[in-house]
Length: 479
Image 1 (cartoon, rainbow, N blue to C red):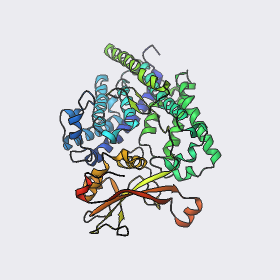
Image 2: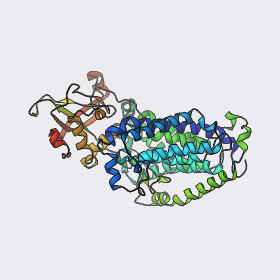
Image 3: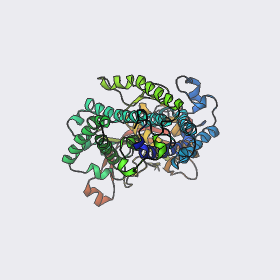
Image 4: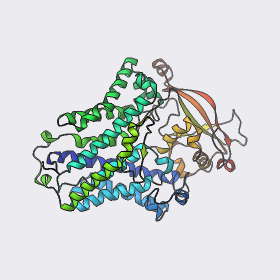
């Protein structure tokens, strides 16, 4: 290995690039399939309206140049097609410059979507995908050796993801220090998966072991990524195993998968890969070396904000410090809820809404609703409406901008909105009234599951939105 290339890491780069392209594919496909109801020209939070108030310098996006639903769909499906091509190895079949251009186009297209996505795209994994995707532009292809500097920058990303999450837990909810947070987390997390019920019912001593292991993985193991091999590989393996544990215990979109992907280049695959191909020892042209060095300098400069945030007593989670999302700060679950509340949306065709009327419940794809329906596995696919419904239950303030438009579209029978749902109880004509009620949910016990077949037990808490007609929906707010 010379100062610039690491030939032995050629297989790690290949696996990383294929996996990253797969994550991009899921992200673009999800954007294409969901945007019309969420941010389309007639969506709940329309992009054209957003662009009138947000200048290009604050949120760079291709859609500042032009927006239409057809153009957005074209961008999203173009990104999906390009991601599929890169996952199939197209980046290694073209010259180095062309491969970099392909990865840069992927990044630009997704940046354009995120920067107009508003609250629907406010999650940490959006910035994480953009940051890792930007580094991937400079990782090269099979015609040059993997650049050492970019490999280190990917480890720096993984370090910030894990270490930032560990710090926010230790500074946040006392249950993390008491090792009791997992008594509640599997039940109250945003979108449980099919095994979450079983994880919740693990013995409490095992929950404490999980919690302690989490602290070690997030506060100690990331430091080992910067040590010589094989220790760095062991550290990456522990991080990957922990992320897979999270994959099977819940639905966190592609957060876990992109973290696993970014950790892969830290593995030393030499024993598995054998001798590197001759091209893996090439340094690449001078312009490529200059670009990689410039990237490294840029990341080091921009890292001052995430580092300052990590050492601050007022640490924040999932913050971007520049409009391009180049170097960000991360974190998750600084606070863990003790109870789970869910917003249940119902409609009725009755001429006058009555408490004992014929109310029928809308079914969501991922969020808990029907107590007899076991949670499903959707990750890495991201159900954006379902996730925001979890936040809406935490506080009506999280839903103030979009919940009224959502109800309005149910009352008008909007097809794009109804496609986001699992079950529409009014297939022939939209309801006259829609209401929302807040319920407290908890996982059933083993005995309750055997006797009733229900995975959840729910209790009415209060009214969330009173019965609302179409003329009232646009100005209605949850209480």
